[in-house]
Every structure is written in structure tokens, then in C-alpha cells.
Length: 148
Image (cartoon, rainbow, N blue to C red; front, side):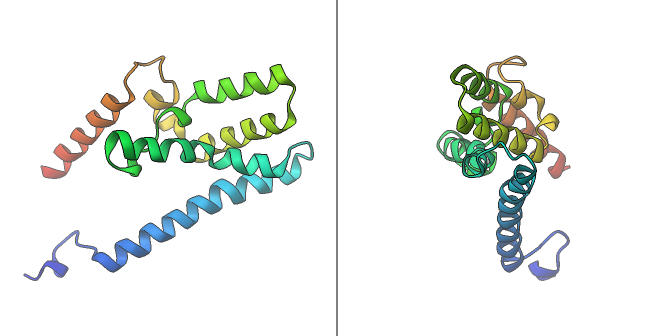
């Protein structure tokens, strides 16, 4: 049977459209939804709120590329509550509206990414020091499940 008719084969054109669509949807979700909510909160600085809504990915995608060889596993330090708490503590300590706006944007990003579904990353380092081992273990489990 030709490869294109085998079960599970999507094809290169579909993959490109899907990944482009996925990136645009994430851009809309992180920026668009956060800015829409920010318009209701009149006290936030929208430019810094937008920066905060993308900051975890701006930090973690390059780290994922360097550490794991792919940006797809780019949820490391920027997607943790520790990172959010450090930003929020600095914002409160410095009484800085712009830093507060960045912190709110990061919080929105974590909520939109459903980070509660990845507690090892969200609560790092409380549930273990190594983020890499958690990601590696889950990828091994995923590969094993797909091979069966």
C-alpha cells in the first residue's frame, strides 16, 4: 500500500499548515486574549503586559533548543511558579507598574498553557530538581506507548 494511504500518515503539506496554524493560534491566544483582558484592567501597561504574555516562550524556546535539541520541549524555567514569584516579588518590592504588568502577562501565559497539567515543571524545583529528566521520562513513555 502507498505510504500516503497508510493509517496515521498526514503528509508534509498538512504538517506545515498545522504547525503554522498552531503558531498563529498560540500567538493569538497569548497576546490577543491577554491584551483583551488587559483592556479591562485599566491599571496595566499594555505593552509590558504583551511582553509578559510571551516572556516564558521567549526564555524557554531557545533554552529548549539548546538543552534538548528542539524548541518543542521548551518549557523550563520561564514556565515555573518560581519565575512568576520572582517577577511578582520584584514588582511589589520596587512598586513598579511595568514589572507588575509583565508579571500579570506571565501569569496569563501559564494559565493559557494549562501548566497545572505539568506539575513537575510548574512547581519546579519543589517536585524535583531536574526538568530534563521529567521531560525525557515522559518522552520515553510516549515512544513506548506508540510502539505497542
